[in-house]
Picture (spheres, rainbow, N blue to C red):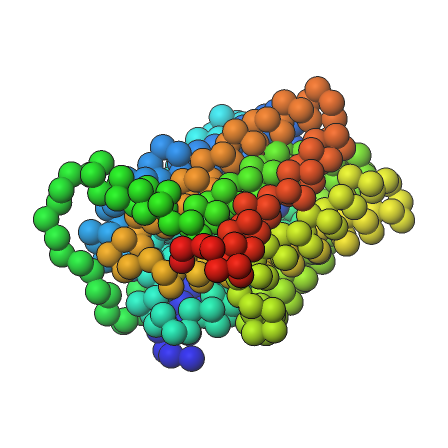
Length: 401
């Protein structure tokens, strides 16, 4: 493990730990303190990802022109500043749902630059020959933050209030920015004359559309993300109001599920060697979809364990899919196009998230949380089919890779 990769791990660990804490705090703040309905909670979720629709594609073209590390550092610092406004407003007694939506929107835009730049920067730090192991290590660390984060976050919400807990995320982003500043790996940035922003954007779009593997990954991931967005609008409503769990127990349920994600991330290289990195991509989603149907079956009492099992299996399958699909993308895309291809993929993946979150809020408000979770589970259960089709053709020698 190189020095630069260690600094990357430090940044990832602190950022993800804080993100998981505030990921519990902000939705609970909307539900418990501001009385958000499922529709309003859907708006909060949608606002955090709509930046991928608004600026996702141009961000990829810009990142292919710039060095990635300064972009990552700036993104962390911007998000820290925006999130700091939440506890300040709460202390002054002027915090509103509108502010939460605006903060979620702007931090989501900063996240666009971070996510696209991060996936494009990793090959420069670790090298293309160690991408699978590097991605698996980073996801293992991220999942470890998910284990402690929600549990600690739920407890802190009960102890000091959701708005104050957001300060933990602010500190985490600052620490992440400092860690990234310590990386000294040289980047190979292709210096080229600009042919126009939209021409460069179209190059990334066309590359994804014409490449069978990338196209299949895009379709599978978009459907899977859409299903996750539908569920995001009602998950906390289901846990708090339907299953009658306290904030602390909500954090514990999520933390137990995340423990399986860490295990799945750690086992991904071994699974890839045993089954093949392509095959585990669709198998992992099939596994997650099958167990996802346990969640809406839960009732108050002992059957709450069905939620734990369903979330644990879902997190495991999702993490294995994420590592294997991202690694494949990083390996097959030329460095000069990686930012635009990553942006295109993120645009496709996250572009449907706001639509799914709003749809989940509408369905949740009209039919209830449980039917909404059934709808989400059904979508996840079929999301692996586009990727399976391409991989099946590859086995038969019919696909052009």
